[in-house]
Image (cartoon, rainbow, N blue to C red; front, side):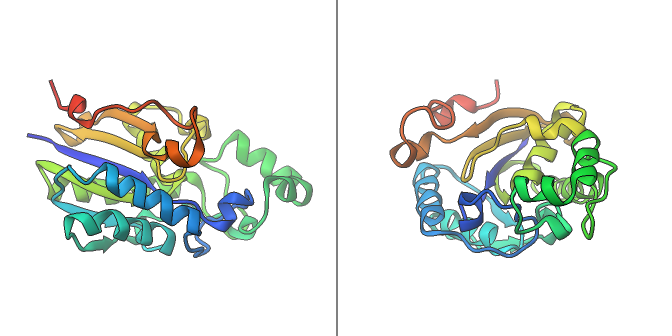
Length: 223
């Protein structure tokens, strides 16, 4: 028996396309983001899920509703699955931040785990809440498949924690909008990353080369 968690990053927003830091600013999906979520929904139509959870931010919740609709599942909101609070950086691009917060951003890139963004939180604080939420989910579903829709930073932190990474390097994990990631938990302490940043369902939108090549989900069954 195991709990297989299908971790999904929300679809694209207008701020994603403009490369703005969103954090906990509540930006809805763009038309493109809704199309991405629908394509992911089609891909997962043949799978069976016992529950669906999502961050309470609208971009994650809306993505979850689109995916869960094919499975007639209600979406349960978990605020702890929110993106990192980027404080005063939210709504700014990386170039804007570098210009106005040169020393702060330098320190953050060096050690995001312990660096508090002005008006925001440290990466360690986000990791603690995201992992606590996931532990509760896994503990509630000892077997079967569970949908969890969250954000780039939160999912990177979860995957990095499962892999035992130095999370100061979590930004090295590329994660696209509406990507599919699967972590199998035969036991909570023994999470196994089975799929990462798979965007095969988005090839029609983005062209060849976006994300990874298609992987049949049936091939991901535990040995």
